[in-house]
Length: 171
View (cartoon, rainbow, N blue to C red):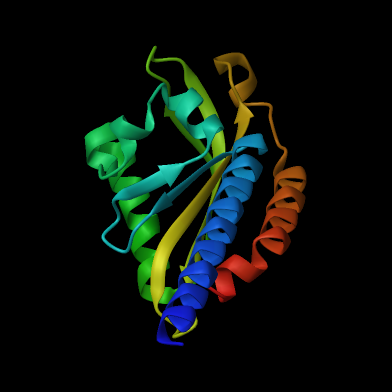
């Protein structure tokens, strides 16, 4: 009888693990299909992962990103700007929107993004991660001055927030 109970628990654990792996793969596929760059940091402000768009825009691999912080990846001024926004998320456990920031890619080409940082809170009310979503607003220097997609970006952020509401509140 004890062997049957152990086998039942083992089978249940295997099934639960398969379901978790399936859910993780589904979430990764969803994030990778998203056109905006999405990244996650832990409470120490180190990168834990990102979607395919983030990796492509930054010309990075997961191995080059995970465990690094902004100072490892960006010029000091950009890293400081990101760090301030991340700290605000950590201290307030609230969302932070940074409109119209100019960054430079690895080839020193300017691009403009709107950034939306979202706290990921567990069921105990503790911050477990920061999700950052970046929407590219303009890619070329000639477009940087004349681009204003803030309403479009706001609508996209709202849809994204709705989609991930359960993740943010039920980790």
